[in-house]
Image (cartoon, rainbow over all chains, first blue to last red; front, side, top):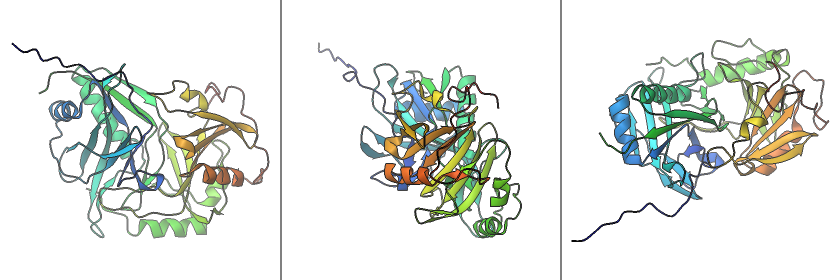
Length: 190
Length: 182
């Protein structure tokens, strides 16, 4: 009988220095596109994040452009994305990150609500501008927080201050309020 | 689905130049910024480092700041873009250096400094500079440390009372820890 031992990688850490997604690599200040505003942890592999977003939040559409995340000095394409539909919608991009000896498996994510802008010219998806309910970035994060908490997941927030404004294709600006959501995922996939 | 306001960028530039009133989209004219009384505002003039002032944004939804955007960029479908320089001025009761005490890995790494005579911090490898002055926190997004320092050197009060290059007012009592009243 053979015994397969599966051990986690050597102690390391979650790298939170990449606080934005990028439209291309290498990731520089000029290629920033969205703030990273959600981190999945404990069993936060990108596959579990994807699965549990589908189950607890109901976002199952997979369309959207590819963006890139920074991790330990490297720049990598997202692993997955999920959205609540094809028109105006919630949307999240997910990238599995480094194992953390305290927080377990981690995945970084950029969530937002975006409108489909068609008039006076077809612009496409534009993140909601800052407004009374927060920006589209804040709305996306808040929706994930509410749905995961309702499903019994532990959540918390940390101040990252990544509030840089991002111009959208309709000419409006959107920015995170600087607070990043941490969500603990469970091992069981759905 | 949103119906895009026609020629939003053009309208904003015209409004900025003409001193037109701020609208429901959260944009301010320079005149409105100059008379803003919520907390002292600082900006880098109508042009800095070769970049024109292109927009002034007001946000007050929990996040409480006025943003001065310099230069432009081209956003596309499903991909926003970062203007080359932005100066955000926050109420210090909402944003202050004390928020960074958590440190890595779950908070950002902070390099403490003194700039223009006030407590400051570099973040994001120097691409972001935050200064605390009076009851305001000035956040410079500049892409690189050298540019961030040039923007900081150009900061002046929006009401004209503090010129570029002069020492900035020291933080109000409690402003560094966020205990100053809003």
